[in-house]
Length: 281
Length: 281
Image (tube, rainbow over the protein chains, first blue to last red):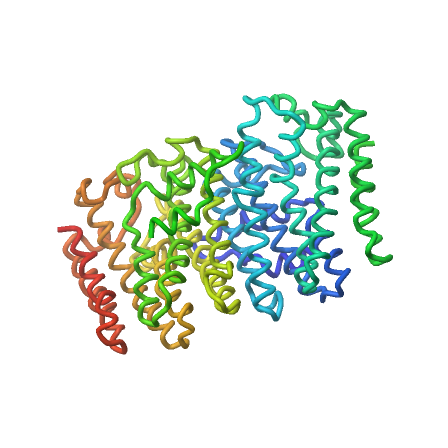
């Protein structure tokens, strides 16, 4: 994955090199590469060439990274540390971080629309549509807006689920659906993978919140206890630690169950939710 | 144009309504709609249906607006007034302005990739590629990066031209080329329109700098004398007022001359550079 990202990210040059250095800094600062893993694994179900899957995976990782760079800005979550390293605006400066995020988002669409991503222009246009909907004001950006407004507002469990589904779930859903789009699979397969990603994404988020609450800095690799300090509602604050654990377990099982129509080729996707919710132990 | 923008921008709703209100505020705060005009006029050369041209024009305006919203941020140019109105981060807040810009950029790609923009997916994917290249780190964002770095660096005329070509020229070039892409014209027509836009864009930028230098706040509708105060090099500071005027005149003539291969259907495009450089009188 990192080799493909290195290929697709521009080589810093000229008097604008700084923004391209910041793009690379943010992308190569670590991270689980979870969205790329989802793209590659779902693409594997449909025998999509690895090269195509890796390009789409790189586009997803670029969008995920842009969202982290902008979310970390002082006017947003004001984080100075991410994955144990200075955030992009600390390492460079705020203006460069804003621009690097902008350029990463733009690059993602350039990658998807390129002929090398898939011979069919219909597929490429479909990928662009899917990513734009997942990342836009009805998806990731809308979720982040809700999150920024959350501290001063009351939230019930339904609000928290909506927020998470938009903020992190939409990109997970597209990551899983992308494999089916690349494989030119029918709408049933696309819906199945989206449903899987929906359950998986919420289980993942609950586990993130559990790690945050339990204060395990080593496992999280970022500032801990921050959401709680800012008075943001999470499913952990609403259901308690044991209630949230039970909910994550239920969602992991439901996610795995969504894949009943696939054989052993889907085993990696079946196991993944359980592996990820075990992070809080 | 504004009717189509109104149709394509999301209607504010739900707990994330604020970001969608900010998107609309920024887009409907005025503006010359120059890029939409270039798309519509170049599309007219190839008898492209108005509906298609207006959708692409809306995407261009969304990208232009996003760039203004982010450029106005305190960490960038720190402008509080734009087109005589409070800038987006003043009217809302910084976080909302960052997110509204992000969402406008994303929306532009969603519009281009949609089937309603053109029946051919090849054309749609081509539009996405063209916009992404024009707006990314080798285009508009790279130019803004150069501009942010400029005050502390020495610049000659060539640097200033490169900066302007990236920061504002790239989007002008794509606006003009987009008409030819929609019309499925050959590469010769595309190259001609890009060359026209290159000359036109620089003439336009010199005129903007002249207005800025001459301090005609009424014509510019924004804070004046700002670039000079920040010590940024412009072609006016390098060539003087009369030298810059002569250069703009030369570029306008060359832009009009590029269209020799078209008949009277290109008259609007021929006249436009002269109309725009007359703004400083």
